[in-house]
Picture 1 (spheres, rainbow, N blue to C red):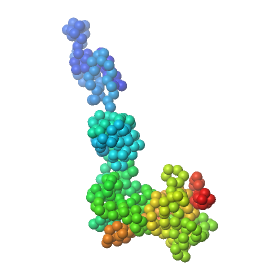
Picture 2 (tube, rainbow, N blue to C red; picture 1 turned 60 degrees about the vertical axis):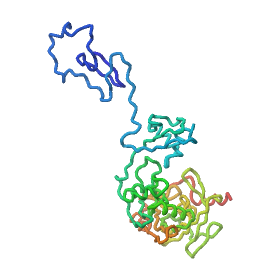
Picture 3 (tube, rainbow, N blue to C red; picture 1 turned 90 degrees about the vertical axis):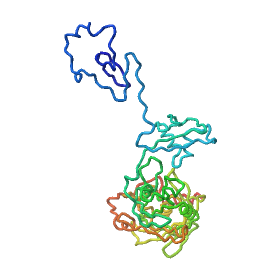
Picture 4 (tube, rainbow, N blue to C red; picture 1 turned 135 degrees about the horizontal axis):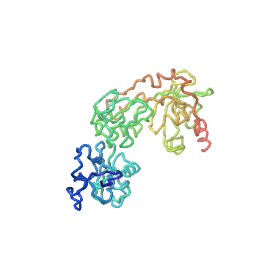
Length: 409
């Protein structure tokens, strides 16, 4: 027998196998001592162990074959491609992909390239590849078919928009190309025109976005004109938005809070918080900052005082985490909002109740997403304190945050 090595496995080749090991011409079969005496063994018993299907026959003395490279475009992937322009000449491949393909950051492009998912003109390339004008760059990302996800809960479909309910815990749209299906993917299955209405197909025509933990109404444009009009209305703070929230209330909490430069009373029970918002402690946090962007939230209680209370919020602006930060700044962190000092819960108790896009498209009526059993209105009186446990101590508390901001200025 002759032992040959293919890849990382040893394969034993029989003398009778002409495909894997030719007969030795120096010793013909008829002159071998055992050639006539030994009965012929059936091929099934004498056959050597069959190599892997991908392994090619190896001749004696040949060097080991290099291990096969993974397919850069497996069948369960989607290809994202772009052609380098003259201004891309000499730039790194991950940099070009990050600025040329919507929804792909440089970090994501680098990770995919390191995983062998980048090809340049059909050949595998590293993220550091220096691009030349005219080269075709392709990324293979995991396909996440939206058809496997349940359909969205439809509220209203008009000529301009599709209004659906976003469940808590689901992203409005994918943040990365290989993320699991999001709400936008579910909408695109039933209303494929929405995916073409926006500037980025990944967003599926969503004219705004809710935080992952927030439930409620989300609007998707059906035409490019509706998408542009809605985005302009949001930018000009002409969109009506009402939220419901359940917060934890300290025993010594007083409502309404005393007026100051950032708090203005608008009724005996309601106040308007005008505290500007900017980046906070950590990458994912926002905070009240004097140099931040203007943010206006009308806050009004909807139930009697207690350890937990239901609130109505009307947002005139749409800053990141606006409702969450303004309530925490008032000393009223939302239940389940651990990022801003809220008690541990099964979800973030913030619900987008109503959306009014009449300022964007004439004739549009306000759309309401009813509160479900797990939504704030239904849950304000039915939260089990024993199941929630105690508040978690974070790097800062809402009360200390408010005091620190004012002392700083």
